[in-house]
Image 1 (tube, one colour):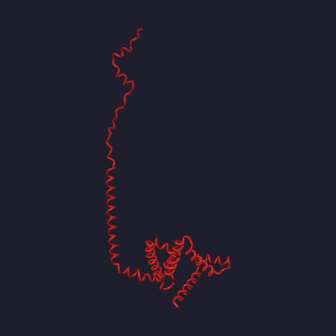
Image 2: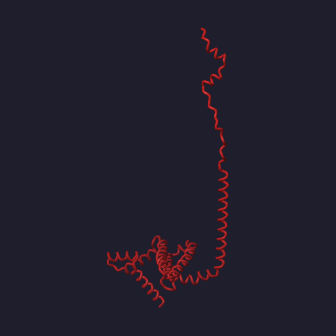
Image 3: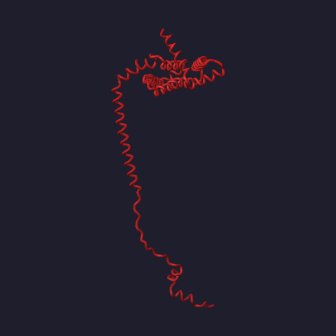
Length: 230
C-alpha cells in the first residue's frame, strides 16, 4: 500500500508540473503541436531516455548533478517568493542533506565511480530526497542522521567557530596595523628634503675678447704691433 501511495503521489506531482506554465511545459507543448503526441507520453519517453543515458551514456555525472540541482533550485526560488514557510523548510532540509552527501561523495567518489550503475543509483537517491512525500529521503536522513549529530556537537562547533572568528579578527587587525606602520615608514623615508636656497646673484660669464685681452701681456701686444721685418 505504501508503494502505491508513492506512485500515486509522484503521478499527481508530475501531472501538476505538466499543467503548470514554465519553460519545460512550453517546450513539451510545442512538441505536442508538431508531433501530435501528448505531453505525458513525451515526458515519459524523455525520462526513460534519461535513465538509459545515466546507465550507459557518457557524461552521466553532469546529467545526474543537473537533475539533483536544477529542479530543487527552481522550486527553492519559488519557495522563497511564496509567503508560506513550510516549503522553505522542506527545500532547506534538502540542501543540507545534499551538501552532506556531496561532502561524503567528494572523498569516496574515486571508489564509487567504478561501481556499475553508480550514477543511476545516485540519481534515484536524489529523486528520493526531493520526492513530494513527507517521508522523503531528505527528511529521513536529516531527522535520523544530521540532526542528532548536530545537536550533540552544536556547543562545541559554536565555540570553535567563535574562537576562529576571534582569531581571524585579531589577525586581520594586526595585519592592518603592520601594513599601515610600513606605509608610514616608507613615506617618511622617501619624503624629499627641502631644497637649499641658492644665491640669486650669479656672475655673468666674461666675453671671449675680454678674456683674451686679460691673458695677453703688454710685451706680447708690442710684438704684435711691430712690422714684420723680412
